[in-house]
Length: 151
Image (tube, rainbow, N blue to C red):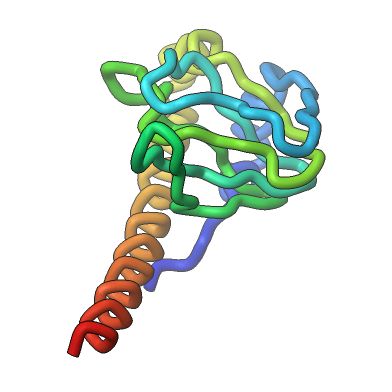
């Protein structure tokens, strides 16, 4: 399994400083909806403290948690890929403090500094690969439990 990486600590210091020049500190109270699946993905966050649940709507009344994120984790990647819509919803599981980045400004910076852009895309891809492995493991575990209960 790949190791979980933290975006800000993975970037070399000069690149991290350039990216952080665009950061804005924000906070979300416990139980706040941060974004909804299908909404416009025009920003992302790096969690400083607290916990966020990524969820997927199963029915009009039911959501399932697909991942839990904490300090240092990247929240949101849909801003990087067309059609720039959130794939999941996100909710603050506890009070959350985060760095917020506007996608348009970050993408402009990446065009100016192609090394930063390459690093950012590479690290976001590594984060996605890690989360995909975790999700795959959870699905296999659930499938195994379901099969045992049926037999």
